[in-house]
Length: 118
Image: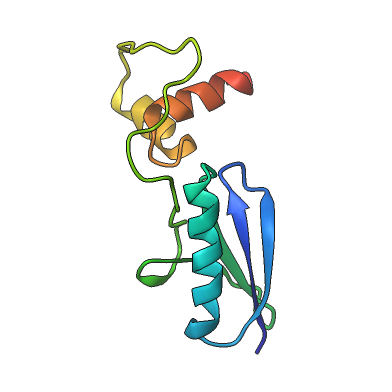
């Protein structure tokens, strides 16, 4: 059974190929690399895939998970150029969709939806 893993950025683009993973210990080096990307300001996650059955999942602080564990820069997010705090009025379904699109960040989800036209 062969398992391979890579680091993906928040846009689901691979940014580092970790290669073959045989044991949990093999993921340690990949976690260190993901933490380095995060410290440099790149939000990322570790995604792995098993070749024999095609299962795809993620690797995080608690081990294997079905949802991405995001490695992010610690501390308050940087201010965006021209950004300013705004209040918006959303129903529960719209807020849930914004949070989902923004990987837990409603504001990011709204920006992503606007950028792609809906």
